[in-house]
Length: 67
Length: 325
Image (cartoon, rainbow over all chains, first blue to last red; front, side, top):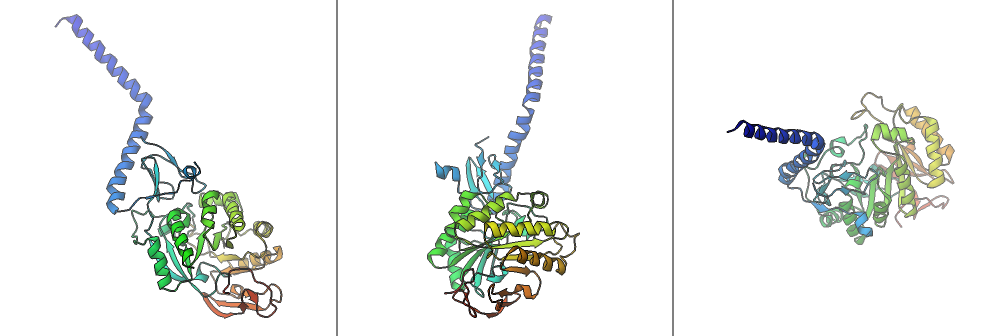
C-alpha cells in the first residue's frame, strides 16, 4: 500500500472519530437521560410491575374528555 | 421515546415520559396513555365506626366499610399511615376487590357508608368513582377522608356521588405545606369551596403539631376563613399530634394547646369545634342554641344521642349534618 493511501485512510478514520466524539458530547444528555431513562423504566415495568400481576386500568384524562 | 402525558388529577400535574410513574406512585404513562395501577386492588379493607374517620355529623353510630390503596399525592412528614401512603403497589400486598364486590361486601356487612380513607383517595380516583356510582344505586353513602389536593374538574365529577368529605386542612400557611407536605395550601382551600358548592357535607380535621402550626393567630385566621367561606356550622376536629414518621423529635400536642385552639374556634364563630385523638368532653356535640348535650361520645362509642330527625330534642333547633330521618 502506498504511503498516500495509508494517509487517506488515516485521515478518514480520524475525521470519523472526531465527528463521533463531538456528536456524543452534543447528544450525551439525550442519550443518557432519554434513551437510558426509557430503557430503565421499561425494564422496571416489565420485570417488576408486570411480574407482580398488577392490571392497568385506563385513567380518566380530563383534557381528552373535554375534546 | 413515546408520547408524554400530563396527569391532570391533582395540582402537582406530573408530566410523565413513557413508562414513567407519577409522584403518587400509582399512575403510569404507557405508550401515551395514562393508567391506574391500583384499580380494584386495595391494600387495606376494614369496617370502622363512622366516628373514626372522623365524621361526627354523619349518621352517628353507623358502620363505614373502609378501603384504601397505596399511594398519596403528598408526602407529609407526620403521616400516620406512611407505610401504605408512601408505598408503591408493586411492593405491597393487595386484595382483589372490584367496585361491584366492594359494594356487595358493604351491604353484606350492613355498612351504611363506604369510606375512602387511610391514604389519599385521590390516587385511586377511578376505583373510587366507579364504586361510588354503584354504591349510590344501592343506597350506600359515599364518604371520603381526603387532603383535598385534587383539581377542580375531577373533584366536581366525583362530588355528584359523594355524600360527605372530611378534609385535612393541615395548616393555614403555604410554607407549612411546602416544607412539611410537599404541596400547596391554595388548592386545598379551593377544593373546600368546590365541595361546599357541590353540596357535599364537609367536616375539617386539623392536626395541631407543636411549633409547626400551633400559632394561635394562624388558627384564628383559619377559623375566620372557614366561617366566611364555608359557614359556621362546618365541624372542625382539632387532633392531637403524636410523634410519628419523620417528626419523631416533637412532643405530643399539650392538652392546653388543644383547649386554646378550640376556644379560638368558638370565638371565631365555629359552632361545632371538637378535640380528637384524646378522651375529653370536647368530643361531645352540644346544641348551639340551648347548649344541652346532644351526642355524648366516648372514643368511637355513642353513649347517648339526642338528635331526632336532624333537630335538637330539647329546643327543636336544626343541627347541621347528615342524620337518620
